[in-house]
Image (cartoon, rainbow, N blue to C red; front, top):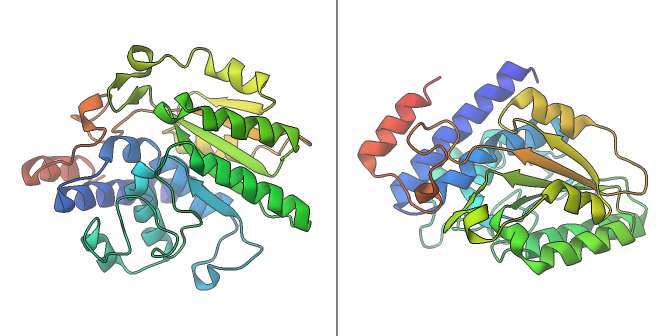
Length: 270
């Protein structure tokens, strides 16, 4: 798919995020908007997945470890054809397949139920280890968040990934610099996160603009380093695409009302 087509998909997913969270009156738009380009690139260009055969045992796997960014995943899965668009109208409603966090038992295309921070990357490591054990060539991708990277589980999983030489695993940090209570540096500084990833045994790629589709694709297409898990440091903007949400921590877990949603959708008209 051409870059412009991927960028258009990302624009549509961002619109879906606004509509879903506004209609539900709850959700996490800020961190969903920041990782949209990564998810679109993965599902439309990088990963071996097929909505018509979603349980293919040889498919690539994706785990949204920062599970509160579910609107970005749901929008991407819908645009990719995993379920009909009318389901987006039911986000966060009782009995909906689209719960506040991804549910593998309810939503087509979801490979892991996530939400408890740190557990998603741990499951991704397990999936990659299982693929190695079975001699399969499929890859595993996971997106983690800034606040999540303050969890010990993230680093325990990272040690395991390096120890077992999981070069079929790609960990992507959606590094937008903000978390629920403020900036990373205000809450709990991550320090030199790139140096830490290197020290934990990752092959590290840093992307200057993780909301630039070409830069995202270039990083994701880089061949794996034999014997090393991959860590992509995606520098992104929280609330990307909506002017009044960009770099504003208040939009971590707050949904726009009808008036602000209309304003956001107008900005995202393209």
